[in-house]
Image 1 (cartoon, rainbow, N blue to C red):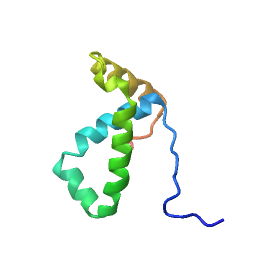
Image 2: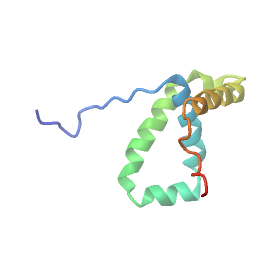
Image 3: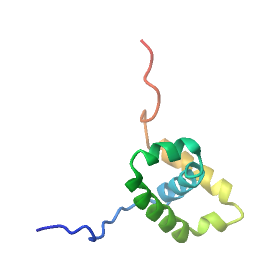
Length: 92
């Protein structure tokens, strides 16, 4: 089966993952460091904008007055599932 460039692709995230990713993208997209990194491959902007826009339209939490508390709770739940992933390696 040949896949066409316009075929859709679905990624599933938990609500916690979506909330944390949305916040991170919102903060990073305006930074010089992020722009410099992404501009190394300008085509990456297309999926980043699609993902960011989809998250912004789908997450009602970002408009709730307790957004910060919800975001922090989601971050903590996700960190609890990571084990050692993302921790710097122990020094010998």
